[in-house]
Image 1 (spheres, rainbow, N blue to C red):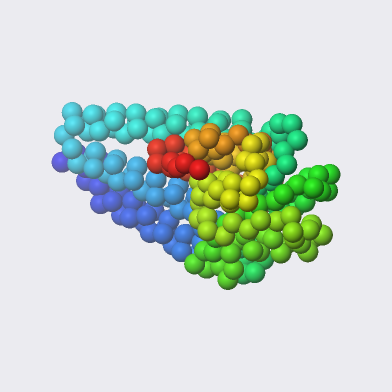
Image 2 (cartoon, one colour; image 1 turned 90 degrees about the vertical axis):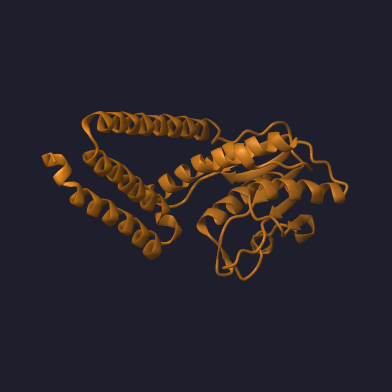
Length: 257
């Protein structure tokens, strides 16, 4: 057994330590630390592969190392392409004069909008100041850890800021972005309101997926981009998560109005 192979217990222990550290980071820090946990888990998987390689004969070891390097390169290229797509679709794109605004929901903190959701609502209010006659759809159901629906909380926030309650429609069933768009469009159709050129409000990093799903279900939309609050770590996590969500939505998310 060569010197490299004799060190395999250290590699295995290191991989387990990184795996445990990622789990603890997610447990202690919650969702905002998911990106950090994913990085640690990725390093754990890479170290585990290198540890296995140390136990193999030279020819198999060389094959495994080459395959690992190719896999890492492919992931980096895919991630870079997804992030480029997110970046190039992150600005507002408003065509003409939309008559209906759809504000996408996000997590609540107790009975209050989270910073992400508050950023969407504040950007919507700024736009509504100049377009006070718009109909507004607020969309989002009630999560397991939320005391009220996201839509209800959003409607209260807009009303408290002075926007007329009678111009707000609540969609309280959606649990993801696809359902936000589908259920909002169906609600408008049931009310006899046109779904042409809806102005959809969300964070810039979310808009690439919003546009993808809108095209898939046949919606013509404009977009209003809102800033993403938080520090660099949270923003990195959010963008990385959106990259993975883009792949998931492209593969699996389908529906018809």
